[in-house]
Length: 362
Image (cartoon, rainbow, N blue to C red; front, side, top):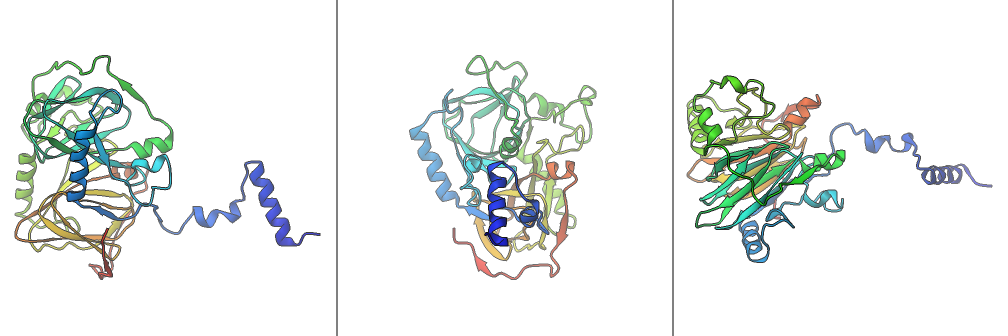
């Protein structure tokens, strides 16, 4: 005769055979007292990423097969979750570095994933979104809302590199992916260059016909205007957790420009050290200029220009700039999703700043 434990194990086995499960044996793993993300804090050095991205330029070509030449970031916490773990930096966000060489064209397509782009280096390239040719320059922030045709062309003389971020992991988990190729390799240009930028030259003023736009009608946020805004903010008191920071928003609604993807540029003057906090949304950072470090859950991540690092949801973090110049951190996040779902929460670190318990070595 089986004892009580043997009977229980046999019972569990029978449940599995009928695709059933016992909540009492699982609730501790499912309903934790606070978030326990699989995503890990991690940092990718630009010298490594750049080498692999440039090598890809000699090995593959953007065409109808692969569509884009991108080397994406893989969070170590997700690598065992194939295929979902293939390009997830957080539970909701994907990011990678795209390369377009002089004379190349990337084919036109559309999908129901929202995309944002931050231009890292190069000149002479443009993205075409719904017939508008948008010139890309370092420091520019671009949006490609879900469902819009888009492609890239390069008529310049030097390689163009930018950071892509999409909500691919979230849509994959929801099982709602759509993707469509344009009938021709590239779509025609039907609007004047920088059409949407010219429509929004005056801050706080909105073209009347845009009041019913379902997505941000401004395709690009130019670096010089972003920097000017940060310089003006620098005359005031900094945010205790993010320094001098601005968000990229839809000028019609005030919501995130990337719909499901939030984005921000922050400026940290030399020696500036923020306080630590944590929040439910996760964040991907790219160091546009300068150097410094971020302490994430007690581990110090030292960064410099070009590096990319990720702060998982509900992780304590703070930032500090070092060296003799301002540090500029571009970041993308899933805060819009968490806010829409009523899940966003934020907490300050009780002691203000964390005790450093170790150094990230990669």
